[in-house]
Amino acid sequence: MARKPKKTAEKQINPDHIADALAKAVATGDVVNLQFVFSPASPARQDSPEQFESDKYTYLLPTEDEAAQAEYQTCRAMVREPATWSHISGELEANRPSRIPWQLVMRASDNAVRMAKYTSAAQGYEQLRIRRRMQSLLRDQGNAALSDNDLPRALRAYAAAVGLSYDYGAFPEPLPLVSNFQTKALMLHAEYPEASDKGPGMLVPEAFAAMALNYLLDDDESIAQILAHPLDVQMGFLEAWVRHADPAWTAFVDGYKASKSLLSQVDGRLLDETQSDDLADEIAEMTGPQPQEIEAALLGRTIENGQWWQYLKEIAYEHPAAPLFLARQRVGDREILVPRHADDAPAAKALGLA
Amino acid sequence: MDYFEILGVAPDAKTGEIRKIYKQRMKTLVMEIARTEINAARRNSYLVEMAKLNAALYILRDTQLRDTYCAERAALIELEAAWHGVTNDPDKAEQCRRRFDGALRDFLSKYVEEAMLAAGRDKECIEASHWDAAHERHAHRLLRHFRHMLHQDILERLPFYDITAPDINWAERERFAAAVAAGKE
Image 1: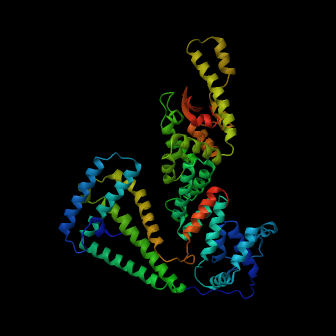
Image 2: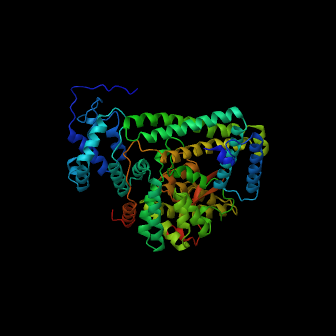
Image 3: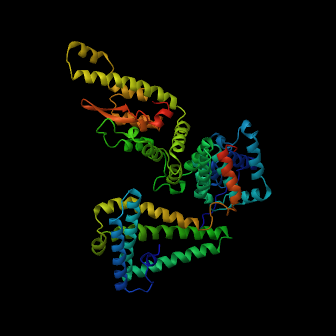
């Protein structure tokens, strides 16, 4: 039996607030807010104690600037269109879960894609049951752009396609696929490189491109499409993707170069140590750069008593692509993180690391 | 999830026939696994295939279990048909949706996840598939994901209940995707 709604007689709902809240949610690509307006606890419902006038719901309503925008005006006209408005009013009165007009969900999802709010877009497309097909359409655009060697177009298309991989419908089990680079970076460096020519950055370019794309992108089909293109296209895309995903990449490049310089000094001293143990070497060891300063230079700050994996997680969080050019190195009784890439690695050169 | 279809037997197949076909299918699968280079994706796919065959034998060879499975599956199909029949009445559709959703979750938990794991502990299945504790550990996560994907596939064919039924213009969608790629959006 359906629960009988408790009507609060004194509650007055301004229909303009409902239209404003819906128009704002659609115009800003906020699918969660759009669903909330129709939810049982919504201030738009007569049987809910919540009020639009309450401070806690000011976020639902547009500011003056937002209300003046063309997209907002279009969305408001869409909400107020007689057939749609009549449906909305009926759904807010009904004592059952609401059916949101699909046109509003589509518009909100499209706006979310435009604003790169891919999680929200994925949720809306999932409701419309077109998420996977939208991904496929965007991948096709990306693939065609790569064939035309149009990297900016490919980047935009694949960014949207990969962004829509977030399967909101899968929540809460299994957990939705998200770019958890802090964990993925640890997996990338799970095995200790026994020789100095080992490590992700030392792979031959073909293997490096495949490994890097698998690490950076969360969409197997996009990865397969990109890997079907010639190596120079793959590398070009990889460079563009790294710079797109990490606007602060140049800051990492500075730290990386500093850490390389420190590494060469520490390396030289360690080699000398095996040959002599006079006082000058001892002084140089005490006053010269310490091995742990290398990982601090990579991260840009020190972690107190930090282990290599702590530095790796922090670096991966701030610069997702950085772990591709790092390696673990044992120094004395501890391990540190050091910069490492092949001398002729095209990706390292393109990204300013070489 | 039709175990008769998975095993490739008729709904009135005798237990002896079910055992015979199960053994043939499992032998083929085990030989295929032995001659294939295994990677993570193939391992997952073979494990699910193996679990499906094991569960098919486990359920269909036991008359009582088989009858219960058939009855619950038929009831589920009936509930889905009933829901499709009342889509014009939102209140009745919502009642049907709730009943169907609960029944579907129970069915998938019982006959996909639990039955597959229980089959992996069955002596006859272990003998044919060499299923062991390591398989079970890995299968826990994998079967949960498989059940979820199955659930998602079923949901896609059901009536829309949280939004009005959309009328998608795919030509317009293609234009939108092209505009996103071109940066004109």
